[in-house]
Image 1 (spheres, rainbow, N blue to C red):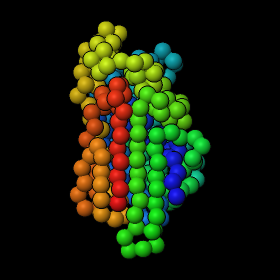
Image 2 (image 1 turned 135 degrees about the vertical axis):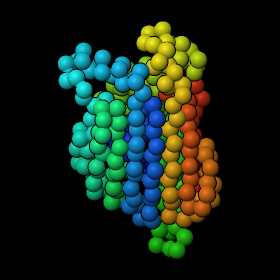
Image 3 (image 1 turned 120 degrees about the horizontal axis):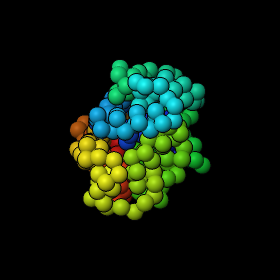
Image 4 (image 1 turned 180 degrees about the vertical axis):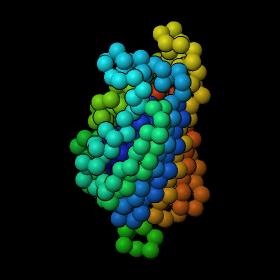
Length: 239
C-alpha cells in the first residue's frame, strides 16, 4: 500500500528547513510505529531577523523563533501520534521527540505531494518497503501549504524560493539575502546543513541521495539546496 505523508511529519521537516543547523534521527518499525528526534538551532543572524519580524507583529521580546508548545499541540492532535515532547531550551533552539503509534493514520493520499511510503510483508521476518521524498518547484508549494502557518511564514521571511516560488539560482538567492538583509543571514544559510539518519525495519537494499549501513540510511543535505530547488531534491530508501 502506498500513501503520502501528512502534516505532522512535514511540520518537523519545516522546522529543519527554518533552522541553521538541524539533525533528525528516527526509527520506523514494521507496522508503522516509530520515533522522530529533532534538534534544530538558529544562527544569530537569522534569530535577529526573526525577532525583528516578531516584534513588528507585536510578539514579546525573547520569545522562541519556533514555539515548541504550539507545535506540540498541533502534533498531539493528529491521529497516529502518541506523544510530542519538543522543547525550547533557548529562544534559538528546538529539540525533542515525537512518538508515532501508527504511521498509516498520518498519511493522506489527497493532501500532500512529493512524499510516498510503501510497505509490505510486515508480518514476516524481513519486511520490505520504500520511502521516497521528492522536493521540486512543483511539489514544494503544495507541501508547504499544509504546514503550520508560522513555519511557512519563516520560510517566506527568508525569501526562500521553496516558499515564494521565485526561480533563483543558489548564488542569486544568496545575493538577494545580502542586499535585503545582511551578509550574516546569507552566510548562515550558505553554511547550514540538515542531517537525517533513519533506521528501518530491515536492511536497506538501496538508497538515493544518501548512504546506507545495515538497517540505517543517512543524508547530509546543504540547506541551500532545499531552499532554492534550482534542481529537484530526491531522497529514496528501499528496504
